[in-house]
Length: 270
Ligand SMILES: C[S@@+](CC[C@H](N)C(=O)[O-])C[C@H]1O[C@@H](n2cnc3c(N)ncnc32)[C@H](O)[C@@H]1O
Image (cartoon, rainbow, N blue to C red; front, side):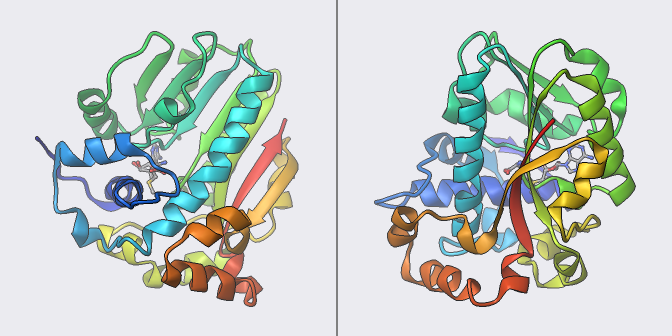
């Protein structure tokens, strides 16, 4: 068992990991990320204290599904890609997508987080962990710049200061010949109302960067391809498989656009 003592934004990745593990324990899981549950079993931590329950876990797994699908689509079209998985936490996306050996995948998070990843997940020839803050930009020198890049940042942008976030985007776009950025964005309302976010509150984390209109990021060299608010993350077949409470909450969210738009997943090209 690995004993961990993460605080603030580093602790939030234990909540998202636990959310995927809880889903995988259902008879009819939505994401079915059994590697997440294996990881949870090897971490000595009181996961329940972060406030994620079987029902609230739905938002975590629903966000992951379209991100996985978009990422898989990019990798099918670009088998020579490099992947930068920023703020990866304990996410097992590398295992879920199982990219071909021609893709090189970088999982990037703070050094303590990456140290835990190395204990939990087996190494692979086409995989590198980088332990650094994504905003200490020297790490960018460690990745090749001559291949199409898929950049995935799930649950990261809101923890960055706005000027750090936009500088990161600017540098990523400048580095690669082409690529896609897939991430989630919180609205300014979500940043203002952060005390209602149980995981953020219990982890003692602070949210900083809110984006109301995803086109705001186009001024840094991106072109928006898709934007989906939280009420529309679940395809109808997935929605039908949710437990009654999260299914009801998602249906209700469609009638309150400012709440639905508090979280979006977005896909940009550059
Ligand atoms: C909500 S968790 C999401 C983790 C993972 N993407 C997932 O969906 O399970 C936020 C993650 O962002 C990481 N993070 C926040 N700020 C960061 C920074 N400046 N540099 C690197 N990682 C950062 C945290 O350590 C944490 O692992």
